[in-house]
Structures are given as C-alpha cells and as structure tokens.
Image 1 (cartoon, one colour):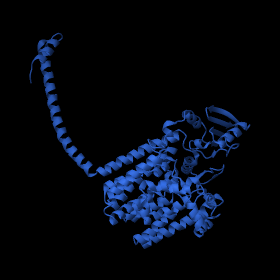
Image 2 (image 1 turned 180 degrees about the horizontal axis):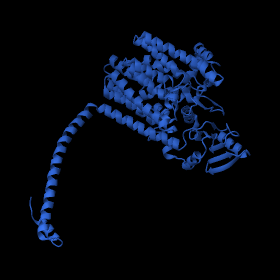
Image 3 (image 1 turned 90 degrees about the vertical axis):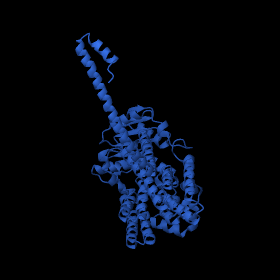
Image 4 (image 1 turned 60 degrees about the horizontal axis):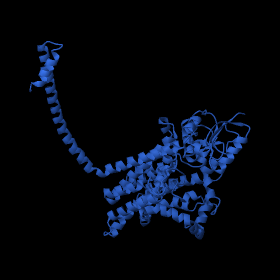
Length: 526
C-alpha cells in the first residue's frame, strides 16, 4: 500500500480538529479507498480493452466487407444534407415561387382540409381541380405528410429524399449488370453530381421529379424479375404526370420482348396507353374546359393532340428541322455528355426516354429544352441505365476496353459537366444565391405574412406565393387585384410587377399598410 508521507501529512492536518488516533484512521481509510478505486479502474480498463479489441475487429471486418455500401451511404447522406439545406434556404429567402411550389403546396393543403386535388387557378381567381393542368395524383398520396409538418418545406425535403434514393438504385442496377461494386459506386456518384438531377432538385417542387427514382426502382426490380414491386414503382411514376404513362407502357413492351412476360407486358402496355389517351384527350381538357394547356407549345404541328402526332409523323422534314435546332442540340449535349454519350450505344434502353425527349425537343417552350427545370426527370434515369448496359456491351465486344476505364471516363466527364454547367458550389456557374444573397428583410416579410388571416384572400408576387399558398384563395399578380383582401408585392425590375404595383397604389379600394425596402403590403378597405 505504501503508507507514508501522505498519511502523515493528512494525520497532522486533521489533528487540529480531531484526535490523532481518529485522524490516522481517516488517513489510512482514504488510502484504502484510493487503492480500491485504482484496482477497480484497472479491472474495468482491462475488460474494456478486451471488449474494445473484439469490437474493433468486428468493426474493421464490417467496414472491409461493406466498404462500398458505406461510401454509398456517405454519398447519399451528403447529397441529402446539402440539397435539404440549399432548398430550405431558397425558400426562406423567397427564391421559390407560386410557380410551382405554391401550386403543389396549396393542392396538398386543400386535400388534407377536405378539398381534394383543388387549387386556385394559377392564371385566374377561380378554385378548380388540379387536373385542369396535370394529373399528378401523387400529391394526394403525399398529403398525409402534412399531418407531420404542414409546410412547403416538407415537399422540398420529400423531393430531396426520394431523389437521393435514385443514387442507391443506380448503384444496385450497375452492380447487378456489371458485377463490380466499385464501378457501381462510380455511377452512383455520377448520379449525385449530374447537373440535370441537381437542377431539378433545386427548382422548387415538381411531382414528375420523383419519377426519376420511381423509374430507376422499377427497372431494378424488372431485371431482378420481381414484378410486383416493379408494378408499384410504375404506378407511382405514372401518377406523377399525364404523359409519363407512355413510358410505363414501354415497360410493357420490354417485358414482352426481352423477358417473355407476354400477359403481364401486354396488360401494362394496354392499361398505360389507355390511361395516357384518356388523360390527354379527355380528362384534362374536360377539367380545364378547353384543350390541354401545353398544346399551344406545338402549334406548328397542329391544334389538337391527334393532329400534332399525325403531323410529326407525316412531316418528317419539319420534325427533323425542329429537332436539330441549335438550342435542341445544346440540350442534348448537356444531357448526354456527363455519361460520355454511352447511352446512345444501348438503344433498347434509351428508347424509354424517347417520349419525353420528343415532347421536349419539339416544344416551342424554350424551358423544355433546357436542363435547368424538371422536364428531364423521366429522361435522366434511362440515360444512366442505358450507359450501364453500354459499358457491359463494350466490354463484351472489346475486352481490351475494360469496364474500369469506361467508369473512369464517366467519372471524369461527370466532373467536367458539373464544373462547366452544374449548379454545385465551386463550379463555373454555381447556383448559390440562397447562400450569398439572402433577402435582407426576409424576417420582416415572414412576420407580415404570418399576420394575414388564413381565411383572407391574397394576391402576391410570384416569389411570395409559396409562403402564402396555405389558404383557399391565393392569386398571382395582376390576377386578383380588386378582388383580393390583401395585395403583397415584392418590387423587382419585372415590368409586370411594376405595373401591378402602380395599379394597386392607384386603386382607391386599397391602402398601403406596410412597406419595407422593396416589400409592399396593401389591404382592401372597401
């Protein structure tokens, strides 16, 4: 034990208040307590070292066995974290809009309050069915999420989470087809930094964006010959937008010819195209009271869906000239270059992308042949799948061209594409205004918006609309000026916004009740 100086010092010190015998006993007892504690600590340390050694061995073994899956998990988590933060900041700084986050938000908010699939006409003041514009019935399925969190941010989070799952399906498909986990991981990484994927994740919320992951999931279960989950994913994809049913129909043909599943394939093909026909030719026009609004984008080919399809086929020169304009070629370049144009080498898979490729390329709406929006959502999954199959095909025909070298090419070209025209930080043209250009008066605007009664009707600038959409009547200026209880304007260089501000300021029925820098709030007084 080593009784000595310490005990003597303690005993001497205690003699000032206690008898010497009592002080000595306390000094010896304290030594015993310390020795027991040291022995207990040593024993505990010995046990922990032994257990830790075993745990370490197991942990190292687990990491070595599942290293690719762990890296995939890190990539998925990193992607989810960044885009959740980025989209939330976009919304907080009023970079989202009534078009289209506000439209989706109001539809879901109305649904959980008993007005199923309803919204205020984005181009007017009437409350109508969402079907008048799109058959994105998945919004009804998403509506229970608002029981958890009644906020547009729930949609942004859901979109990011589902898109992040797309990278996992890319990994699973590549692993199944190429039998190489490292190459599969390379394709998953390429998915997460793909400019088209990134842009549609950042651009508000759109139901069709979810179809990217749904089709990747459907194809994975198809090659696994697990047809029930495949059908579930196809249905989920179909209810994101009306024209998507044409792609689900192609899955039916693929099942017939590639998998010899004639009954299932014919059923999927027939049902999908019947739904597609019914929605485009009947349901949406009836809900709108007119032809599908997007028909105007193809006026060069006709005035009805049938006429447009017929003229596209029977006027090949006009069709080819439209397909190969400068903007369309640049759109194709940005779609295909991240995967090294490998997708073209697997036409049996790329055919799934043809319906939406034609819809986008033949449209007069310039946004539809740019990668900055949601219009490539149903094209992107098949670019990845076809590129994966192309790598296998090249390796079989030319073994000297290893799968690894092709994967490296995909990796380098994906990085090049992201740096050249992707939206991530530190690239050539980053989309980072939400980090660098926050609205100075955003908290004041949010406070003013929160004070507007939910039963009041409001017309507002587009960039305010997604913050006001959880009400039954929300309009977009100039619609609703004169009818709405409140007019909220974030003044910008946009001429329409300036005219709306002037119109409201001169309207004797409204009074300016608040202003801060470029934000103005008017209230209807009679």
